[in-house]
Picture 1 (cartoon, helix red, strand yellow):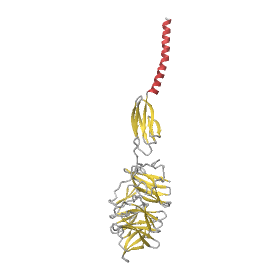
Picture 2 (cartoon, rainbow, N blue to C red):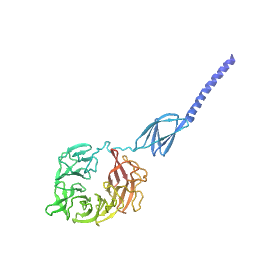
Picture 3 (spheres, rainbow, N blue to C red):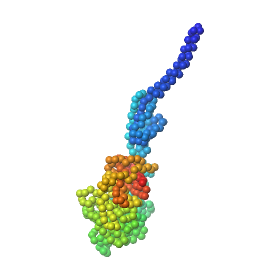
Picture 4 (spheres, rainbow, N blue to C red):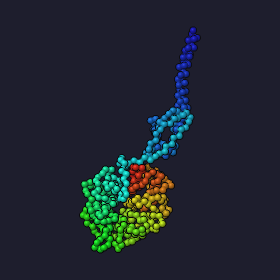
Length: 428
């Protein structure tokens, strides 16, 4: 009897000892030997959230060990769309998850800008667009007022706060920030205008009955008074105008015939000089000091358009060996011109990056310049007359450059991605 009781006690003791041991061995097996691996690959840095645990990956591939079972995950990267899914991790197996980051375009103000067809005329600023085909003034997507007559063309002021409306027999001025105001007629006829720096006057060309010649006019928008400055021996029917910020010089391109003529006009002594003849000359930009004018054009019909620099003081033009989108050229303080080009480097052989990286709350972050790009941002420095690479856009930002601005801290490029806009800010 006692023998049987001893056996039972011994068996009970063994069970009490073995159960924790078996549990411990199972836990060890479960923790160390029932694991699998997940390898996540993508362009760093990116974040992985898996079943509530967060990880940051700073390499092209990151490996994590988890128990064998089903998991849900989310991979995210600032400025890009998140990728979510589920993955089954098996014991001793490796699961590969690739994060194909897609750039997420975010509106600048949290709303989609209206997409408006503009057969002629356009605003530099997306918050003030004029639909010529419907003759509506639109601001922030809302109708302001119907225009009373058919408008053939519109030219906006640099700030977007004013517009010149071209009708069949009248040229009118309209303040886009004054809803109640009607257009004010300022000229009977004009092909194009140029705004002065403070937007208080415009320059244009009109026929002068007294002299029987075309004359360059400066029209004060507050009084409507037109001052005649320079007369032309030939008819200037089609043209583009651009005035320096100090209004000392004016660039006039006569586009009446296929052969375009660029004049440098000195507003102080009323002289005009034919400085360049070519084809497809586009309206350009003045330097901040008002002495230089950069523009796009062709030396002959067969050649490709390139950038040219006009020295208004010395009345000469030199080629810069670069092409550029005519609307994507801007000046900056310190004697710089920024422009978007389909060229990668200048023919002078200068290839060093002008800036390397940039970060901002509303900015796509780019740590390294991406090579083999077709569309790129450059800066031309008047001090050394060299062109430098700033940023290669094609492989970095999957969109279309729409506008460029610059100030003393750098440049801003507005990109259109799908139906939305965002700003890329490049700081010195």
